[in-house]
Image 1 (cartoon, chains in turn blue, red):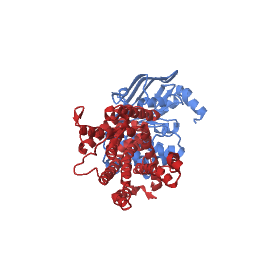
Image 2: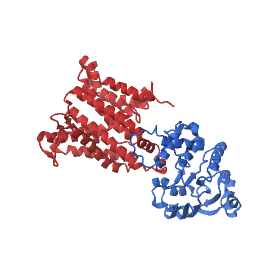
Image 3: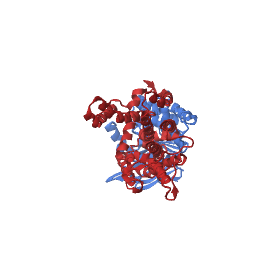
Image 4: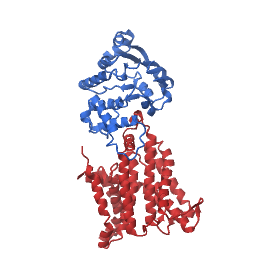
Length: 252
Length: 332
């Protein structure tokens, strides 16, 4: 059974159908990439999956549950974690505190008023491990807002990863990164692959083809094709709808 | 400048030194200053409690003096019925501080819970306005209570009785207030450093991210609002006893504004900043007119606020991070 099953999803903003009979499934263990030109409805889909936007119609099932009945804050507890396209951190906290807060969230309620978190090893030890995984351990005690852009992107993934998710939703993890930074993230995603199921939304085609087991192509709010990277590259419909256009525009 | 790591030690030393303030003022024949100091300590407790939600939670509550007023009226009304020998909804009055203080804290917390539960559904400017609106409602509620003096307020015949302590004695009352402030400063620090405190601060910095990592901010903001209201209620109970008088003026909206200024002046979202801000604010308020009078500037002595206002504005503008930033520096 698929881990994530999106069926006939619809969401419109006025005359714009951002999700137009969108169907998609992500199998356990796979790295699934979702590509599509600007305005194809990628961010709208992510928002509906993470619960910040409610669909007009359709169905989203996650790990056998009806996800639409689950409020946004509960979805992380089901094992659905996301990263943001525009870096969304706790800027005044250190890198370690950012990740520790995610681990705290995972451990249950936070109605503990008198015990200091500073000496709480059950938070900081696993948080440091996650920072090591993404290659940020050396920056653990720096304030998030003072980190370089690339490091903030790594922290963005670390927070999602700390939630020990069944499905990691990555919303353009390479956004705004240089060639070197992108390589760091691609390396990281290749290491995570297999250990955690991923739905990767990304513009960078090299990154997508380097990481993904399967690729779905989103155009005008619906998925027009799903297949292996090779199948997608050779799909004539995809070439006209997206890849050709993409090469013409030289993505910016 | 001192490292923030030593803030606790510096605070404790100052607290211990302040234990001897009554002796020092007596030696200089200025014993009335103990009463001024008591008032500062009481408002510092209210400012500390406001700072929890304002500084750490990012919640600009423009009605904080309402909870202070409710705490004060609990003490005042219980004292009134004790004196009259009557009851309030079947409950007899009392002057026993072991009853009045916890009740003041609880009832302020209850008001904060009911009002916070509604206000926290809004954000930003709407939150500021709705907290102000509720505070004004409470203000007019007490103005309308003719039995308790209406807008003239309510005189207390005596201070509360705290087993063994003579609270009528100004020096004893000062020391009690100082210890309560010390305990509150310690407690609020613990709360800020707890799991709850992290969530509160996380909500201020990025509410969307907090939600997506699985923490719904609302219950935590409400808990913070209730704790802050309880703290203000405690300050109110102390203030009622200090003045032996309660009045709707305690909860006038300008009083809420004063509390906001005290926190901002001292350093919003810092540990001891609210105490520093309250001290400077109330010292200026008390001694600016006296100073101008001594200098013979009678016009300014009467209209001292013309100097008071711009002074506050200049400090806030030029000492970013408030008085706290002038004393303490952050370390990487």
